[in-house]
Structures are given as C-alpha cells and as structure tokens.
Image (cartoon, rainbow, N blue to C red; front, side, top):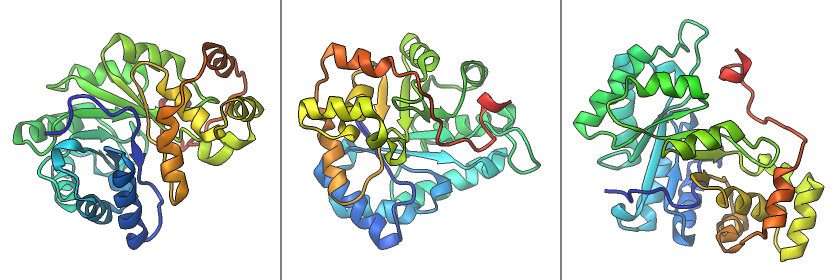
Length: 272
C-alpha cells in the first residue's frame, strides 16, 4: 500500500527518451528521493518505467505510482482492458492513482462520457487494480459531475500549473474539497529561465529559477508539482524541497500578470 498522502514533489515520465534512458532516469529519480512517479498510457513507456522502478529496489510500499487512461480508451471495456495492461506493464499489483487523462468530447474515438467511463473505474476499484481515482484537465463543473458517479472521492485533479498559469479557482476548490492539485509542466518546459521575477528571486537564494517555481508550487496547500528531468536536473529539482521562499517572494510570484499555457490541445474545457 502506498502512502495515504502524496509526497510533496513527484516525477514526470513524459518524453524522457528511449527505453534505456527511461529505465535509467526513473531509477535515478527514485534513488535521489522521489517517491511519486507519474505515468500515462499516452506516454507509451509503461514497461520501461516499471523496469526503472524495479531497478531502484525501493520497497513498493514507499512508492506512489500514478497513471492515466488515454482519451482513445474511455469506453467501458477499453478502460478495463487497458488499465489492467498498464498495471501489468508497470510491474505492480495495484496502481495507486489512476486518472481520466482528458475530458475530450469531440470526435468518434476521443469521447469522454462519464456514464460510460466512470463505472469502469469503479469496477477497477472493486477489483483492486487501482486504489484511488483522479481526473486531469478538468474544470470545477466536470469534477463535480464526475464525483457524483465515482464510488470513491476524487483524490487529485492534474492540470498544467506554474507561475504563468496559476489556476487560482482550481487551487481553492482543491483546498476546500480535500483534493490534490497535481501540477504538470511546472517548469513551463524550460521557460522559467526566461521570467525576470524568477531569475531575480533565484539569485537571492543562490538557487535556480526552476527551483523557485517548484518551491512556490510546494508552498501552496494541496498542490504537488511533478517536474520531468534528466541528468543533473533530477537532483536539482528535487532539492527545491529545501528552498523556503519568503512571503514577499511568494507574493511577487503570485502578482505576475503574464499568462502562458503550454499544453493547449483543443481538448480542454477552457476551449469549449
């Protein structure tokens, strides 16, 4: 059984590289200290991630393993079949947290119908294939609609979140409803280095803009960033845990008015 709470920082596994690189990177991340590993069917690297987890040789009960159902697999039987396959590929008995990846509602294949998708999640909960349920890229209305159908509380909503997309409404909702907001693209895919406020704050602490962004996210109750990294950046990002920002620096970040959304695929509710 994984921890009841999400560790303060997780590790993303999207587009790391070939299978060998994925194994090495995931294993290295766990050895550095990450205990929350985030994956998805869409990433198409479940076996390599599972091999990296096994290679790190950390007791399973210390790890929190998350995955997501691809939007092309949202029909009832597809959810059941592909989730079991994902569980097996990851090499675990149970997926600790399983998300609906996108609430896509357009197209013949990429269709999210909560009355079709969510009962399959409930069946997987009963079977023990998954232990917690989550949603990703959902707004408040979609979360509340889904929660009426889930047999378990929604544990987390995973959304893009960083200093240029601060998700104030979803933060408040998560805090008021005992839910995690898991922040993907927390480093704006490298653009944190281009934000003057973050560079100046980083100099104050002898840190990097990436560490400042992660420390800011971790200063917010119920928010957990999941940066992706390779090489030396794995350890650098992890040590954002050691950075405690002064209140005035948190205020400065929260006052940034510029907005930038990185992941804008036409399948999120902000575009409907």
